Length: 394
Ligand SMILES: [Zn+2]
Ligand SMILES: [Zn+2]
Image 1: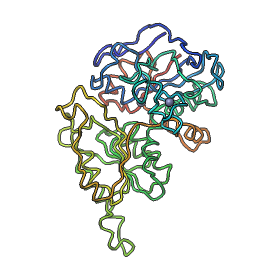
Image 2: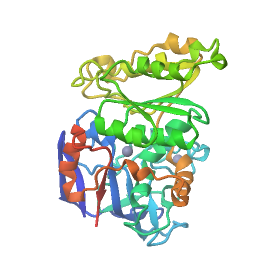
Image 3: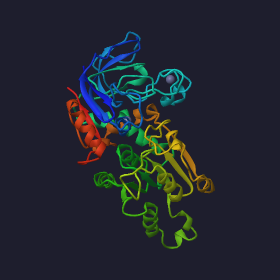
Image 4: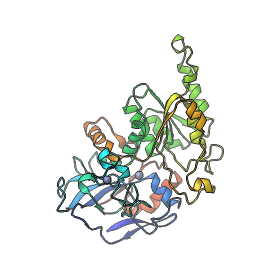
């Protein structure tokens, strides 16, 4: 089968490799029709999260069931399914409580497994023609329609980007009337903005520095803020203050920020003063500044256990300086972590099918599998409007 291999840092190749094969009676073999490239794949590509060099990359597959293990009860050959990034078993103490990204059995000795991901169980990646899906009954979400139909790019986003964006909004209960500041307008930040809108937020600010991504945020109904054009905290306060006039808001000056904030960038945030450099501190500092008293904060950008390219030893181990007192004195609540895909993917599928959600509005490029090396390079450079890339197979 053809597959995308991360040969070494910044070197992607499309190669013929051994076909993925069934190993357990609980497996299915998936014939992949679409497979998305994630911002997280770029952390591997840039050599910041190491350990899958030489292996197949990718963790966002959509496809059709090709072969079914004898112990699989809910699937038959020909079923169209999307498979979440995080591989769960469905029966361990974490899975039964809905924490599918912290599954205890699929990566023994740790919590959480994923396809094509370092330190997540060694599973082969999903940017390939075939994928072995373990515990298929728990991991495959059945879908209507046919490969290549109008839902193809909506459904592929159920593997990770849409569920993670929704997770960011849901874990801090974004709801009617909330004001939300979202740092980062990659696929997850944009879909967090879209999800906040679906959940009834009154005003949504999206902070980024790339024109095409900010434009997309605007198309989705958010207010784009370019962090290179000024202090985003001041800009949000200025815009919010225009809304707060008349007697209804007397004595409410401390509420000039937002009720909710989301970090959808993570450890590789770009510096505000020099975009060519990284500054992992400013986002949490801005969040602590801009949230109102009793504000709710979601940290969903990736913070890996080890960063091979960190600026100092402390950051290499993920120890970040955080304005703890400010957050404490605001009674802020903080929620964080990986997306428990299984909590949201069924509900979001049904919203797509009913027409209530169309997440594929953020998909910018649809190259073939063979074009993966160029797609990675351009996506990594954030050039030519590369926002979300879906590789097409077959
Ligand atoms: Zn992903
Ligand atoms: Zn489990």
